[in-house]
Length: 566
Image (tube, rainbow, N blue to C red; front, side):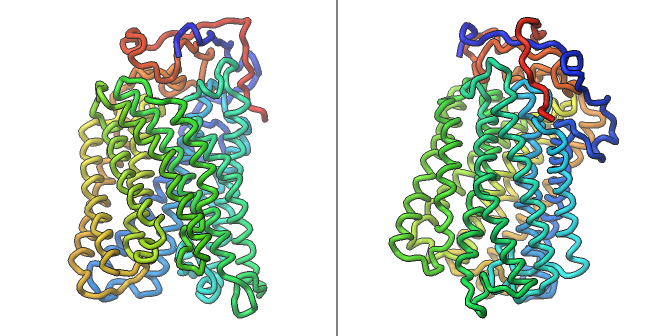
């Protein structure tokens, strides 16, 4: 997109225009019911990272248990508790909220809005996360769930009412939070862009949040329905899923996976968007195939709704239905592949800066490709039947969710940290963090492919001694992953407090969030920034690569309404 195609848009200060203004920001705001989307975004990110540490400690206890074939560290019941809580926490309280945190912080800034459409609803959605999380982790003190993060009946109906009840109600709270957030994102993106910004002018991150929000609204209510029916079976004695009363547990699996497979894309799509924004900046090249990348997010969201039964190839699914879901699952690799080739095409011949953000972005691409290839393998019915419920599935899941999501989250934090705090992160510490994470991740999860092919079942605390050496290798990798968090923690805390002050636009990026101060003003923009180029026009005009922040122009004739709706 060229300068000539983009109109100039400007706006007077929000406080003067709408009389809507947040109070001056204080440190106490991060611990209160605050309606500023930037505060809420950071609340999401910090809270989710705390749960990442809690889930990580649980994973290390399990890996220590698995260092030897016998069950000699924690009782089997406690191992099941940790297994259930680790999976639930990492998905529902780390990756999903972290994506929501990035969206909360970035979406209004990227589209030139003052805030999210419904600020109070936004704050309410956030505070449901710590409530649900504390309930779930607190269950360890009373009676923790132990039926696994899938909570399949009839196991979940006989493994302890209190723990299972807490698990169900925690997830209902977290799911409600997710739905409220999705409504807010959809309304904000569709209604509050600056008037000159068409859908095809948005950064890809906005497209990814648009697709993610639609996916949440279509799939999460189905999980909520399954959980409510399961609660009735558990607490009231109905038999929707209980085979002893004539219920069908397979129906629960259908309802659970109708949400939980799209949940993979709910977790990964925001990071796809973030990576699509990070790579062009640090490669100094336009995003290769912008529209294909943007529309592929929509295609992934649609296809994500019709692949759930590939998790149930061994659950008595008819052969003809297996074929349908095998094909749809394999087809979803096409829009995903479009993104991969776009990122490679963007980097090809670019002036790549190997800073921490770019290293994690490149690590994201590499790890996700491995997870994607094994995903195509398990989409094949014969192969899936062979490795079902083995450690091959554990390896695939973690290459997608840890290699994909976690690398993407760290890439996003290193990239947008200067905007959020006004300070730069320490590069050597960031690079140490990347190297340790890359080594730890591959040492932990790569051996699991072979363990799965050799026949080691997942979700067990004891195993055949012939699997010992590979399990010990994975345990060492898990320890390295645990150590890798320390340089990040030190870096984030120290840099936020005493880091080198950041310019408003330290990367010379072109998207709107970089056109305001670092950290942004209370109402984001004193005047809305001028749109003079596309979001990825690096190298199109040599002036873009050399320019510092341009002062936004004002134009009283053009006054878009970007104030919150409530």
